[in-house]
Length: 293
Image (cartoon, rainbow, N blue to C red; front, side, top):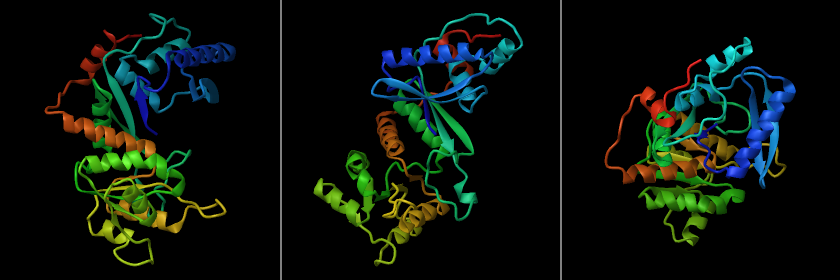
């Protein structure tokens, strides 16, 4: 999954609530060392999904971007030592984005659909002074070819069409030509967005697989349609996702990720130059001198 630091959607009150709950749980469990908690925030309320007395793959990401050596400090605490300083370090100046890396192309017949279970095999990190640039760098590190222009194939489930519309409008605004299946093309035309209609499988040519295999499209946005009984993803979607993976074309099944990519591409268009700074300099910018155990 993606991770963003510092958080961009939490209010100050929600952040305080998360800290309070985390502190109370850690004290109640008498935890010493690393403690991994997962929260869901809904309507301003914090709900705990799970608590694990261990590290997670977010730890190296946060350690790098904050300059806080979390594993070393946690080990020190677990062995009965005292931390050199206490309190929470306030973020300042930088944004960091952790993006997942997948190995779908190496696993034949595996659906590229994402869900709650972990499918990523690694991560990449983008860091910058603004969120859009950090997102762009993270995407650039995890996708073989970012669609700065060219064309995108869009096949959106009925339940997602209204949410997808501003994202697809954003792709069009970037000069990306849109190919779309019948229902999605109808949605786009109704909103005044030009789209090239393509047929579903076994409904004629050019089909969704034809435009992928021909190399005409450089991005696929496909949200999942399920069978009427709600049990299984429909076959067309599976074929679209597998064909894009095998052609090494970025395939996005999450509208949140697609929206983030649009914002990242917009940010990249606005930049005339890119800065490069060593990771230890980023840690210093972010929080002053890194804490040492």
